[in-house]
Length: 446
Image (cartoon, rainbow, N blue to C red):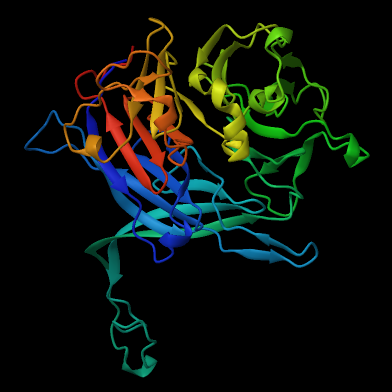
């Protein structure tokens, strides 16, 4: 991993009339399986897809930039009249389906409803119909005296997005994650207390595979925070909880996976226990490595790597922003302590990335054990700019470019990040700006 990746572009979400209400705040980002497309969802229910341009002939060594490919409204605000609740249009998660043909498909979800979208291209149109005129109206059959073969004529490229399936009424609580299975036929969706298994072709029923709802809601002690299928074994999946544990489940063992196969939980150090211990131990994101051997779990202050074969403790623990330990009281008062940060692996599982405050994001090299703090800002978003490592100091002597922990901006937070599946290209969502950085000096993954 290069400590100072070159910045490729700063792409803002297309402007929205509702930007003052925060509708254009990015709420998820996801590369497709080739990395040529990048989809983002926002609080206003829109999905914006960026496409990587092919390499320039003038600059054969430069890699293509990502430009807006398509924008569509995925979800609208709804109202649950039975519970008198507003259902936000905010896109919680986007997942691409493996490409089967020329079209692309993705799943998007808000708190309640999951939708399957198909994205297709048209650059030709048929002309010369026998029974229709140029405007598409039916001709008077008495005027048709000869038959002709319609021909395809080139036209300007059109990207068409159409809803293929709507998976509704599967969740009582808020959907926090969706994950497509490696069998390419099923996917799962998780809310606070239940995980459902869906078939991509069937919208009117799903199978409940995890249910942690207690008989009496007063006995509720934990909720599900994230879940993901194993990348290679279609019977395995993991889900994380607000108590800091990961549970690996095997669908071959039982149809209802309430009894996990393995429980990954680090025993708490009694000497460091505080009022905030339980809140900061809640896992906000879990991701399998591409190899399927490891799991990455992000809690409030750390990111941990677990080996699937070792349940007792993580094999690696990285401090994301340990300097915030002394600030937990004020972070609790301003609700920042409940922020849900995501994490990501690079293509070879050797580097991990996660976000922090002040528009900082962190990278940890698992081989060299080196780490770096970088900043997503307009100053660093000029083409060919080099990202300079940043340092936060807690007290004592400050170096020239150091930033004091007291001057961090907690309203600027990097919650959503994504890493290209094979190359050193990352997408960073900073409020309503999308930053795309790529390491042009060192495109090989370490």
